[in-house]
Length: 611
Figure 1 (tube, rainbow, N blue to C red):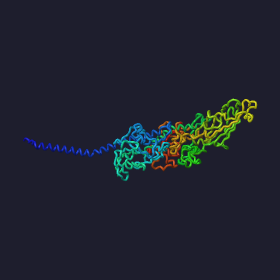
Figure 2 (figure 1 turned 135 degrees about the horizontal axis):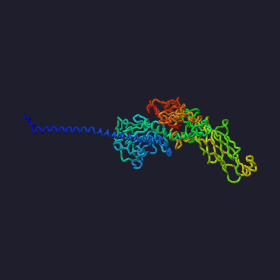
Figure 3 (figure 1 turned 60 degrees about the horizontal axis):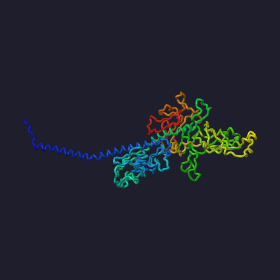
Figure 4 (figure 1 turned 30 degrees about the horizontal axis):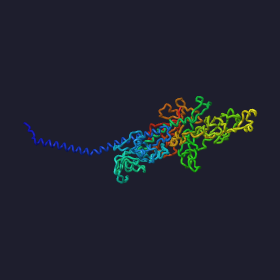
């Protein structure tokens, strides 16, 4: 049977229904897309901002780590671990200087991220706004002449969502009209052409716009808020600073320590060892570093670095309240002691001896601060003075092996020419140093005319010979400043003072092999020789010499959960694993396989010397 075709009227109705359906579906799609678009845009903006913030944070941490690891010379303004200040307000919009960090800043410092200083392109958030940046007190230079003091005990003083931090980077987003609320000060944010008068309150919202309270947040449940923030936490940045300091110590300061004392004795009992060999000073007793005196102790091979210093003069008034520069004027610090390293005096030891080809009938006397030698010398009565070489042997200084000193041949010496001086010494088993001085008599200080001939006839071979040779009496003085503090102990030293100035010696443990001490045989033994080892072993150091170390320091990382508050004098509350086992004095480790890095183990090791 033939099927009847729909009428034209029915076909037109069906087409109209399909058209209406398409229109309705399209409208619904448009409505749904319109409703979803703000959400999609917000997600895209936040993703963009998260990426830009993370890149800026990576650049900031990398910059700090690189600056910390870089040797100080020829830098004179050296603050390892410090963060750069924000961009100087006066450079906002400056095509040359925009993005450069200010040289110093009032803390907490708030400003735009110093992208040019960090070595990156200008970072912009999703609303084309430059990133903002806040630095914690204690982590940037507060004034042009100031220095930071940053070590693994240094805490961040700002919080981001309650987490201890050293800095926060903020993508400000669009400007807002902010009414007053629990965390917000009312403000209609205005953003005109950037100028030196730029105001962070026009960019940072609510809690973030009150930096003086040191508390920052990533959200505000009450007020209008569109800041997107990323914290730089203490836990994130300190491990990198600690690693950089250990590396820098090993490259810059360890060579100075291992070369400070070398014995020069051809009769040394260890005939297999060269005539000159490095000796490391004894350690100071381990204890609370804020009250420790850092004086090396007899027989102590493990403890604090022996960085006792002499007084450096008065830096404040009244004059009687002098102490080590640059410490503030309070009670003198325990690690300053002008009487620790002094000349040996009677009844101990013997008097030094002065000799020379034209010098005779000499006599030397000693006090704790000066050696004085009188002598007779033959010199022509007529004509100019003649420089006469001399040697003074047997100068003995106490406790040198319990400190870190160096020779200063240029120290003022009355009666001795400034040029041509040499000093050398031997560390003895009792920690004294026997010093030899060579130099030339300063003839200009000798008396002139014929009076010496009349007074000192007996000093010549005969009275007739003295008519042509003449005979004069002279004196020289040798101060104990021929031995001075080693530069690394001096916090004011432009090149090497960074370690002490930042108090890294307060968080470091020093260890030497027994045979490398002043009374040792100079050669520690490693297991490779087949004998019992007395060198220091540093496990997992990835070095063929990990069991041949003569001296090391272990730098404590930041305080870990479960460890006592610092400062304290309990050894295993600073160091972990084998490093925290003070009973075993020769085994140390750069990691512990059973302990989580930077969570339950965070020590760093720097080698001072190895076989």
